[in-house]
Image (tube, rainbow, N blue to C red; front, top):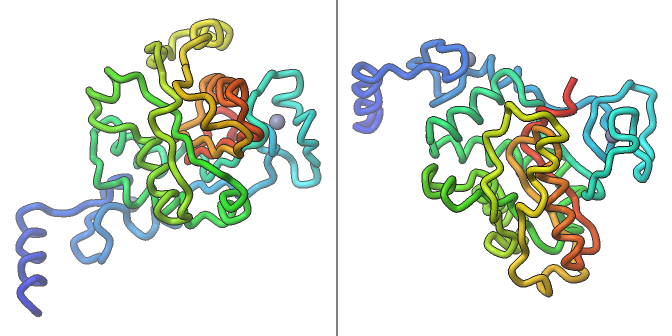
Length: 247
Ligand SMILES: [Zn+2]
Ligand SMILES: [Zn+2]
């Protein structure tokens, strides 16, 4: 045992490590936050999904990009396609909660690894010109200390060498924490919540719009609308966890 191993053993004695999800003791494991069993149960999106909205579909279903599936047909979605890495469930839900609400920013590295190494990304990101995080209202960002979507975007920047535009698409209305509202009320509320400061910079670009959790799709769709109005050619939505269309 070298000195650092002694130190770790000592720290484990006073601050026992346990899995953030199932609370199992991790002192005998090389893992710091999540046990191997929970890692294996990460609810990745691996079934067939509508490429327009991300809804889970039957094995033999086919999705037509323009018309969408039964879940999104007739819905006005302003993004052209979407990719969700995982379902907002189980261990993923725990990780995102701890990361966002308990402000355990150290978990970012883990979530970042999950997103950048996901096999779907290598088919999507190379065709993109710029990465744009879904913005937080400034007061919200100040209170939390970070914008989780911005951190994920910076991770994609580091991994794929794609530029990030984090301050051009702005949120000018605080429309979050509206879980008590119906879908149509949210839709009305989100209207004009976003603003693009320098529209010219998105002109003709393929934009990868990044969000941590997709809840109704309304926010991401409204962001996409603003990007399109600013001349963006194509908007691909990337979400870490899908809460809306998972099944
Ligand atoms: Zn566990
Ligand atoms: Zn769909």
